Amino acid sequence: MHHAYLDKFAARDSPVHRRDPRAKTAAFFALLAAAILVPPGLWWPFAAVAVIVVAVWAASGVPLGYLLKRVVVLSPFILFSLVLFPVFYGGRAVWTAQLGPWQVSVTREGLELSGNIAAKFVLGVLILGLLFSVTRFQHFLYALSRFRVPQLLVMQLGFLYRYLFVVLDEAERMLRAREARSAGRGGWHLWRASAGLVGTLFLRSYHRSRRVYWAMLARGFSGEVHVLGRLRWRAADTAFASSLVAVAAAVTVCWAAVGLR
Amino acid sequence: MAALEIEDLTHAYPDGTQSLRGVNLSVERGSALGLVGPNGAGKSSLLLAALGFLRCGGAVRVGDVELTRGTVREIRRRVGIVFQDANDQLFMPTVFDDVAFGPLCAGLDETEVRRRVAEALEAVGAGHLADRAPYHLSGGEKRRVALATVLAMRPEIILFDEPTGNLDPPSRSRFIRVLGDLPATRVLATHDLDAVAATCARTAVLSEGRIVAEGRTTDVLADADLMRRAGLDG
Image (tube, rainbow over all chains, first blue to last red; front, side):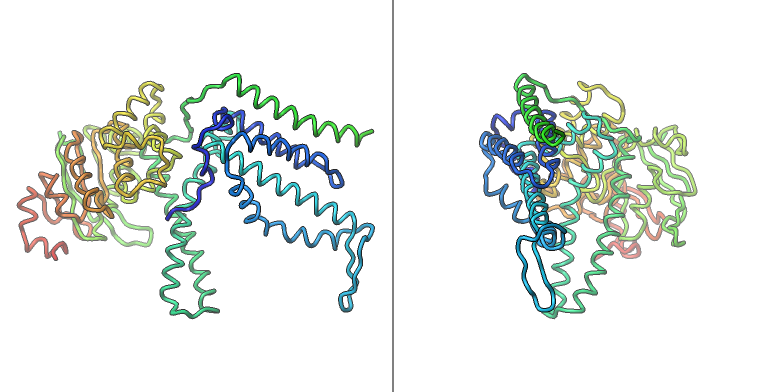
């Protein structure tokens, strides 16, 4: 089965693709931080970060549709907060309505908070989506390990990425088998089978993890992860990373300084 | 001295089921031994036991080294295993990383690691796959890369668990050819009798945890009675 993999466009070429993964990781995470730190009520920092993201995207050649689609696909995760916050977050009401016995009001603070979350969500998905469209996942992991992220965590991410699709394939096969044996009936029986399916999937993954561990031991694994250094840092990488990190920092310092005054 | 010697090996699962009931086996250096038997006979258990992954009674000797808790690392340096499911063995982001894993764990320096990786991939005809992600390889390619991950460690003995399982005919023939050309001592645990006939000079038959026959492959496979009793006919 061929699932869409995270770094689908990472093998392409562009001035951004060619940068060292450490530079890209540092730059993109700096932008991400700049977006996430923005307090509710402020909008210009989002615009600033968005402008930079668009500029990097333009240089990368990654299809816009792909990045936007990811935002759409993941949006259900924040739909709840987008709907609930304007209504339930206290503050000055800007609109009130009568819904049967309840009085529902939408507050200004609620709207600000909701918009804040939405902006962070969209920018976050775009930034990470772009990062993984210009950086191969194993290079990203290599950058993490060079940034002194604990090896255990890096390995976990690597295994997750490696075996996620294997597990998805198994789940797909089991679902198809269930479909084939359910004779078109749905409802209660399917739900009962789902519980069994999840349990079986877990057991299979557990046994697989044991075999993978044995395979690692059989090849001499003794707890340490070794990585071959294969990448070279160039002047362009310094320029790329430092400029983006500097802008991200500047944006944050600007609104923080204004707020403190 | 035999390359691999197994003496009175016994093993039981945690629930009490006996999987090995006193196995005696001896494999000559440089030779290929077929280990045939129906599913459930204990073939996989025997291979895992030889590498110290199962708690067993009896003895396992590789050359002059006996398998104990203290010598298990040395045994695993000398003996490699290609698992039934290649996915279990290809756990790194790229083929190159997987094949380099063994040499890196052994502490070899970068130049040597690269040389071993190139050699191993060349030996299995997978040199062009070095930068690919294991997930996107075909069954046959995965199997060959899994073998390369073991070859890179230059083991004296290589154990194979169902090496031709799930392979299409061209991949199967190709893998059998690669198998036959290896200089290492080989043990093939399989119920693919044709693969055994093509690569192994000697064959042992495992049934219900015991070796019930051992001899030249041609003799063993030709014994219809034996094949039927061992559950290998049909």
